[in-house]
Length: 144
Image (cartoon, rainbow, N blue to C red; front, side, top):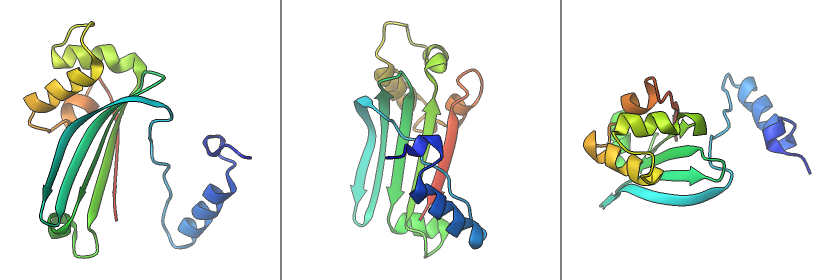
């Protein structure tokens, strides 16, 4: 069996070839390998629309903030053909102390609680607090 993280996965190779043939690209979804805990930050369902965002702590200490919005409100922004928008922030273990500093938290506070408090403080607008230095989270998004 091949390990897709090594870049030799035949399914990933085939997907890349198809995408390149039509002018597209394939990006691996940065997701937790061994999630140990999760904390819901937002969960809203209104008619056909839904919004969900959570913070996830991986076994290696990486923190992920993962979100998904779907429904007609997404289509109103991106066009009729798009009904789902997803995103992820990836905070490397070495930047978790920076996350605590930006959030005004102590080293003893639970990191998922720290993310939840920051989320509340910035009304869910995490892009700059997480991607700007010193936290320097990696951000990725996609839609379908």
